[in-house]
Length: 377
Ligand SMILES: O=P(O)(O)OC[C@@H](O)[C@@H](O)c1c[nH]c2ccccc12
Image 1 (cartoon, rainbow, N blue to C red):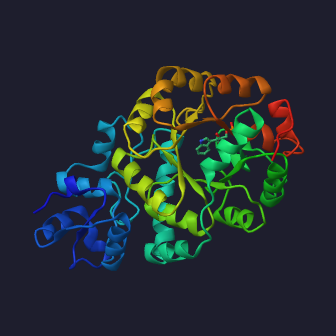
Image 2: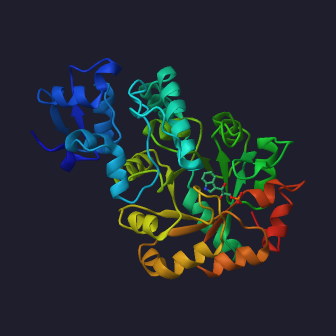
Image 3: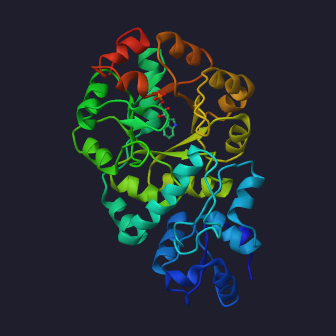
């Protein structure tokens, strides 16, 4: 049988006899696989359609898992990923086999919660229906184009302004939170793009916020700020009007990242790939087709914020980033014009800012304070 390993990410295993979710456990799949076929598809779209028709869709690391007999966590750990997965969203009944396990840090907790959330959402709205609604969404806007134009226009990093009510590290940032008003104020005051938090449990965000902002007349391209662990979330974000989506290197193994990048491209979306350290950056720089990298100054595992992180990583890898034509976003912990100038001189073309704007009485006007000048729209 053709190796699925070599075939990933766009070759789809066809297990025509598999229909009920309970039959999807890796051990059952392994035994069915002898009778299954590996199907080679000419394009990503064809592969996806084929998978949908046969009610089969896997994240690519899962295919590898079945092929190699290794667990997803050991594959991820071999790539330096510390975040463990608990149960795959597709198989809620499977669990990790270790129900007493406790998350090692907040990011792991968020990912475990997300696995449960996504499996529940998928049970209500299967992938097939979400893919169909994503096809009816208005075309995605050019996220990178908006950043480049704003950077050129203003001579300071383009602003991705974040619509964020709360965070695990800072608690509630703004009591009086009207996402549409905030988004409109950001746009009016020169934000190039907006980032909308969609995680409910830890950030008090929602996909409804994303959708209402999209339908409010705001023109800025929108980033769906989500903890993506499953392709379902990408299609869902597109169906709600997202133009870009965050993919976090600390969470996603390489093949999932490649697979998800291809899906984003198919949907016309931009992937903002977030890294925090040199190891993650090096992994991401080895992946073809990456156009936008975010360097997070905050560790999602410890919450420690250090703006020199952007500078340090740019000093180490700036040359290759430039050579590849990748745009870099400096993320988190930016409060003053000096902070913005510091990451600008390190080589970023854009900044992602939440707290220092959203906490202000008038978040729109706070933009001029952050940059030391008014931004042109
Ligand atoms: O509020 P700050 O410090 O300006 O940070 C904004 C943004 O960078 C931060 O919210 C963020 C960066 N990466 C994330 C991943 C998930 C959730 C949130 C984030």
